[in-house]
Amino acid sequence: MFYKNSRKKTINTKFSLIACLLFLLYFFSNNLIYAASITNTENDFLIPIGNILHIEAQLENVIVRSCIKDSPFALGDEILNINNSTINNYCDFSNILNALPNNTNIVEVTLKRNDHIVNIKTVKEKLEEINSTDSISGFATLTYIDPISKKFGAVAHPISLGNSRKIKIKEGYISTTSNLNIEKSYRGSVGCISAQPKDYIGKFTDNTDFGIKGDVATFDISQYEKYKIASLNEVKRGKAQIILQTSDEGCKKFDIEILNIENQKNPKSKTFKIRIIDKELLQLTGGIVQGMSGTPIVQDDKIIGAISHAVENDPTTGYAVFIKWMVGK
Image (cartoon, rainbow, N blue to C red; front, side):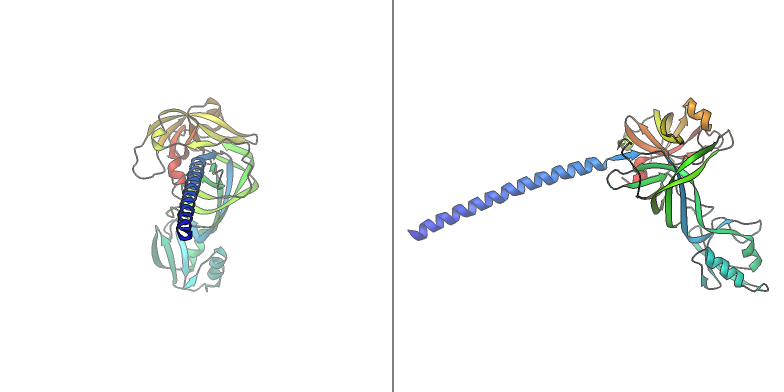
């Protein structure tokens, strides 16, 4: 009898344990699914910004910024090596160049040109004639900040110089700006934005086909609105708006028109064509100017893309890239 009762008790205990485990599995799996659903939903949102940024960066290699006619060097050449001495920065380049005797007949230089390694033989005078740098700076627009990861995207096209299409960045920094000065665009001439750097807000190393990406360190996003990321088929022709800083008072929305949309199977930086139609912005800028690259575009309460290029012969028109391409989603 004792053995029989113990067996019944054991069976009941096992049944209770299995039931408890099944309940816990159901409870936690549903909560995990719910949590994942919340995370996925939150990840579908970005904060379009529109602030004009000052961008500065240290480059991985010394790059030819300009050269005279008949030079063996080309704009955008990356100088890797001179007479078997590695060039890590402009200081290396300057020191090695100065150390070369004036009567040096042949100088062997290793370059990176159009993603190919090129070896050339030249003379000291030709090296002295080039204008080279290991740093760059300029102005562009902050497209978005991810409210969860605090990652940012800006510019909407690669930072390039000559035949160096995507310059490799060793370390880059972004800052807010003040005292904006806008040189208007005219037919046949694209204007530009200049400003005073203000507060450092983040850093980056990624220089992609669709702009720079990095991390925001200090930027108050509490006054900015989140927008859902539009899918490709949600972008449509017709009216839309850009968000842009045109003064120290902050960012405003301006009306644009989407003229046509490319049917792209592969990501490209010219996805759809736009026209500036806002009279206030046209009066202020004449259309798209240098520095507006990365300006976020919204439509139907969704962020759909960013300005990537101006059309020189008609700067009221330009091109934009899908936000999906920019964020890589």
